[in-house]
Image 1 (cartoon, one colour):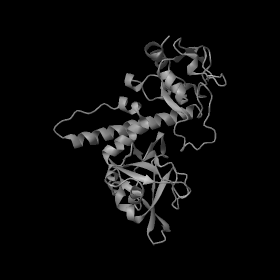
Image 2 (image 1 turned 135 degrees about the horizontal axis):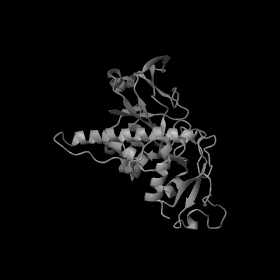
Image 3 (image 1 turned 90 degrees about the vertical axis):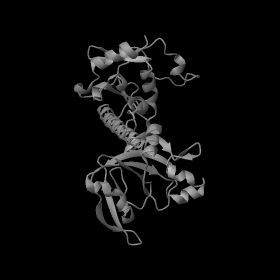
Image 4 (image 1 turned 180 degrees about the vertical axis):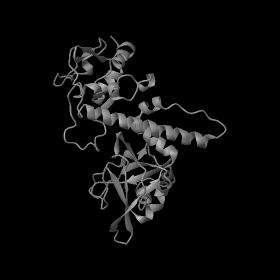
Length: 313
């Protein structure tokens, strides 16, 4: 599967949106696999931009399956503008991936270019560019961290050689990321983009720019044969997600209510500010805010697994 970097920023002269990307005809050849019904994995990079508000990092991804369509517009130099539509709106990464780590660029082709202005200049006129499989893997690993690594065992090296191994691992990484994104969207939508325990909401922040305010937590982990149904998920803030995964609290049904049970290993300092000015609302008997649709409530079997295999009484 081919991967491309698409540069997009606030204030761009092009008609970019969470649903699609506009570009001049000089980049048309890079989208040629779409003509052969081969999808493209697009990584969205946000430069500083004309308004100097860009995050200078890789901020999300989208799949592209349909070929570009010509628009009625042209650049000042007369190049026709084209537009591709994403299969689904851009999925933001859980955390923005910086363009370089410890001085080394994520895109390895830039390593041969001196740091500073020279590297910036090197990307001028390359708002759309190919992304090597190994670079894509690094971006996804930095964006999704250990969650991706646990879900992605290495394929066996056989007679096809190391290049095929890298390609196969990239394919698996993309599958994991797609699956995770679908799970996240379904779970957060079911809980109306609120944390099921604290009630915290993303408010009016654009959902395409929310990178880590809410998580979709698996009740039974994928590594333990947990599925991606909404009934195996909870909408949690990142802190509560980590506490839940660490077994420091769980949830049990009492009649028609799902209530929190806190572990004795949960230290008060983990959820309370030193001066007492703030405390996570995590106490025994706290009711979990459940989806309106009862069929989307957490599955008893998934909760039982968490209580018996993860929770620390």
